[in-house]
Image 1 (cartoon, rainbow, N blue to C red):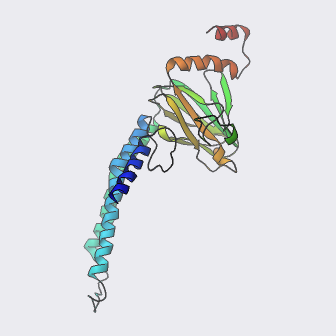
Image 2 (spheres, rainbow, N blue to C red; image 1 turned 180 degrees about the horizontal axis):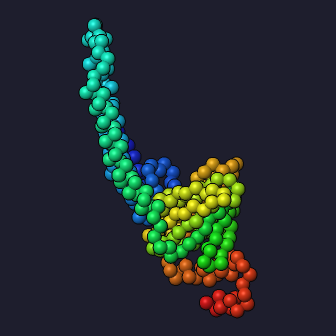
Image 3 (cartoon, rainbow, N blue to C red; image 1 turned 45 degrees about the vertical axis):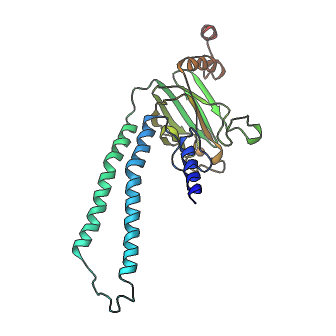
Length: 271
Ligand SMILES: [Cu+2]
């Protein structure tokens, strides 16, 4: 029995130490790759979880106590009590206090996420049925990002998560994401950055993240948007500044939004 327990613990630990994408038998969150997500995880682990456990244990204790203490065999003449003002005040006040204790740090995190610092890179994500379109408004770049079908997957590309054209952003830079949709509601979500925002047709929502580690991060559309909702993943590749500059110069040609002027073309090619 002890052995199984340790195996289980080891499995939980191993899954919690892995990064960037969902793992089989995963419990809890994906590993945080931004400050926002770290805030969310700390809030959950250090405040919500203890409260949840304490309430569950307390209610379980009350139920067991009531079952034993007030069982029929011990109480042939049951009590006729219906009200107890003190208890009623307590079971209203204590939950209120718990909610207030939870609300303060919760709002703090929410406002921090909502306040967008000065953006160093801006990208625009547009939800379509059923793929994502991306624009780099300052860089004249536009492209579409489709999920790679299972039979076309290369090694190390996760099923249902890898896409043909990834979003590329530099590490440790504030990336502002403008999010909208072209047809129905979608949602742009990236768990390890702590980002999830609705993509609404005719309206632009904003969010931001600052990825702290180089790597590939996976997310998915998180609003039921139709039959292929599960097949419009989001892949963000976080790279070093040099790699980003390199990617930019090739992407400006490959994904040019406006036709390139001839001299601009030469300028980019010579970079
Ligand atoms: Cu969608």
